[in-house]
Image (cartoon, rainbow, N blue to C red; front, top):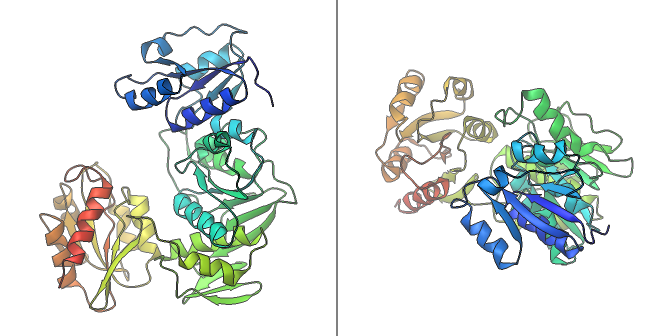
Length: 441
């Protein structure tokens, strides 16, 4: 596809926008990057664009832009922007075709894609998938909604055998031809209702990942998920006891070709075992065998702050899930644990209703240690149901949790809210947990 001498508007000055701008210019287009955001806030992005010689319209010039019919050949929208917002609507109202960044990149991509979507676990599954491909001799890269955009990868000119592509509902909203060779559906749960009118619209956007697939393609779907995977061949997985083609239980994967132990895998939690199962099924479809894939997966380092094993101490495991900044992530982590938990939770008070969490506590959580500005409210809610203690900082929280724990327990930091009352972000909070756990003697 040639873009020679076309006027292309790139909407959004972030990393996806920069990747799309590079790709458009590479194919001969005249490019202008537009962003309605405060120029001071997006200054680093603008500096990168200017350093590469791109024209930009930031802030007021973008908001005041008048789009005339015939003036622009196409507008490419970054996934963080809603097509219904004022700037994109100026282009669609003038009859300018609006293309999502991922769809734009796909139009120039000649590499096979293993695309991964789901409400939770996308990034981890994408990283595992790329690690397994690379460990088995197929050059791969985790990309898409995960760090490097598809347009950026394609524009780089680097050759890959297969890309592990994280795909969000936002990216799927604007697809037309996008067709991965493998599409993974990890799970679905309420989220992004600030973007969508309701759950049905959010679900429908995500389900578009299967829209253009044929019988030659593979749909990898978590057992029990009520999603229509279209014409693609469907393979299911479960680590939660449901009937499926691939299952995990008692540290053993059972698949159509036999069984395989997972003792060397450093991931923790049933939800991460499902991420592993999905990745293995996707990778097997490219001709890889299970023993080789598991050896590659054994070398995978779990992402920091996402159910990350920090240490074992006196028969206890200390798990850092600081990235659980909402209740759904906390609940998913709890449901994935197969050992008794001493839970460290709390942080910034976002006026969330924690009462639904009560259903997940019996038989899973032995005790809680509460931190942050929301600790008093959580103590009032949970203390009638199980032992609860409050801690002034992370060091004290870890010491209290260690004292409350028994051999065989998990001490789990999964806060269920953001960290900004005590830390600069979830990463700093997770590092504080790591330091406190490693200091135990």
